[in-house]
Length: 420
Image 1 (tube, one colour):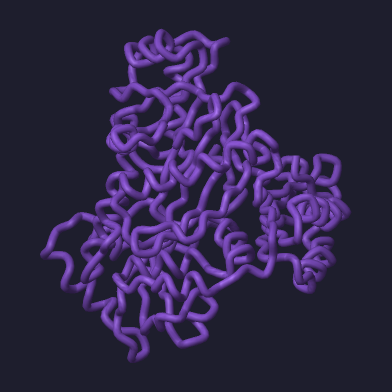
Image 2 (spheres, helix red, strand yellow):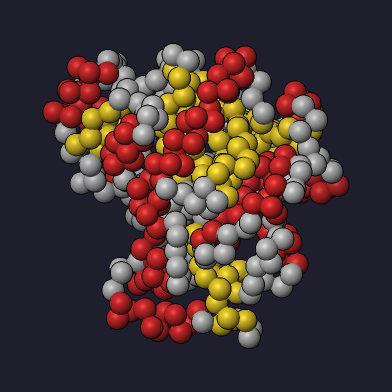
């Protein structure tokens, strides 16, 4: 008997992409998305079918695509921007000039990226690229010890990242990782990077969102990953800026040289970088780079602490209209610190929580001046098989990191949420 589908919700068909057509102009004194939209510029999500066709790179497919995107309510197409790591071929085809193309192609080829960073004096984790096989795992174990990291050689972020489990046999590790790649829709024929796991089980990890103007970093917002884990899934559940752990603070003076090395490697003139780094033996090692702002509420935290919205900087750079340094440098943040978190219902509340019970939380979030953004998912169903759950993404701004964390907990814990 066929199993009954319990959940039919999903992304709106054809729109599960972070690529937008931009209609209207960008004033050179604009530094936030709010200012851009208030001035009348419009963003429209590009339908998936058009992106797929444009991403083939076939010139014959472009005229009808550009025809469909040419205008919106009388405003001409200014360009197309992507806020994830994909669709570089499509963005190159749909923009008259796409200055970020070369940098984006490099960061999604991890083997080439690591080699280029090393050539420019930027530390990365020692690694071996190659086809996913017993031979690759054997070589990684011989060189990097009992628990190396495995990741696809293309793409960015934590999709398809796995830490070798020493208690499993080499064939079982291979089977598990192959299955994880398949479940993540990552073709197992894509080469694999086997890398050393840096920093031990108490690893110190950060992300840095860097605003680059005319080849120079103007702002670099560092988020400490308070919940970096030693085993997959590698979920950043709580992040805070500025960092608070003493070892990270001590090593921050060495960070600008690393960031400059990344910018030089990518030959980035204008735009935003999201760089993931780990501190190992007093040296910052680059784990990953995105030529885009950090996802989720990261951009909101950057905006709160700098006065500049990295999403706007990235959009302007993508369509060849970069924001001038004078505008970026004229802004200041309203807050000195921020934390962002993914919170979930505690186990003892999952059977009793209802969608209506979230109304009090929603009311509190809407009226709180220090909440820089939030997103709530909730379910309401009395069923022991399909148990209700909820997830809350939230950003809090404050005058110190400690104050931001305290405010986070006092705000969400009474409603049954936890950050652990």
